Amino acid sequence: MLKVLDIFKIGDKLSVTLEGKCEEIKNGSKLIGADDNEYEVLSVAMTRNENPADFSKTTTVLMPLCDIQAGLELRIA
Image (cartoon, rainbow, N blue to C red; front, side, top):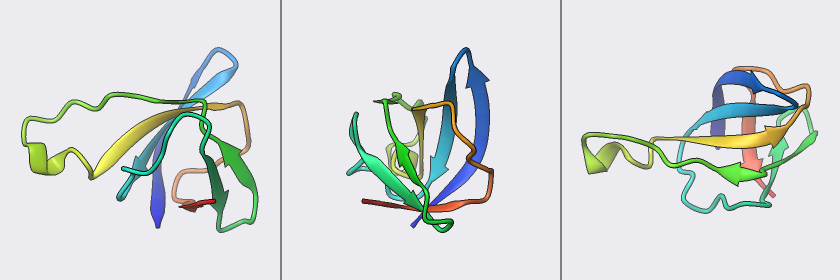
């Protein structure tokens, strides 16, 4: 499971930080929320971490403008 940590609006897109194992998320991936809504990943951002072990703990993705909320749990479709 992935958890939405924070959301930041950038123009007509959303920057969404996800917590969890995000290695399988790629540009174009679909995520399904606990609310049964489907969310499209437009782009996966590079993360910056000092410790390589922390690299897979959070990832930021770009999504189309949608009604996603912090705290929502997601899974990869």
